[in-house]
Image 1 (tube, one colour):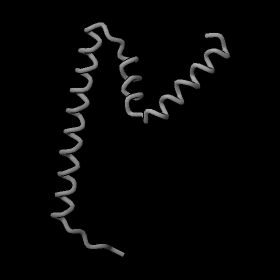
Image 2 (spheres, helix red, strand yellow):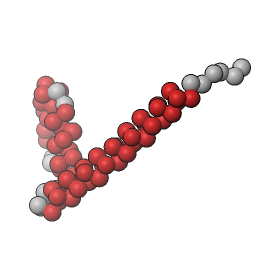
Image 3 (spheres, helix red, strand yellow):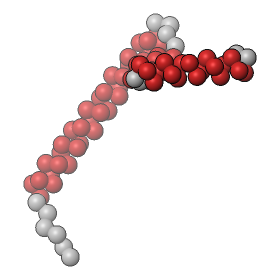
Length: 78
């Protein structure tokens, strides 16, 4: 069965998605530049990314994770 398509609505939706994709690409470029700037200042980008992940976590969950990491590190001698 053939459905009726609202051409203008479809075009508007596609245009909106194209604009969002363009903005996402621009933001990715800006983010890449920020990481490159951090690297040029001598910061370890891998560690910065890890810190960003940690900052997103709930403080209690993070404390529990830290506690387990210390426990496991002690258990394996590191």
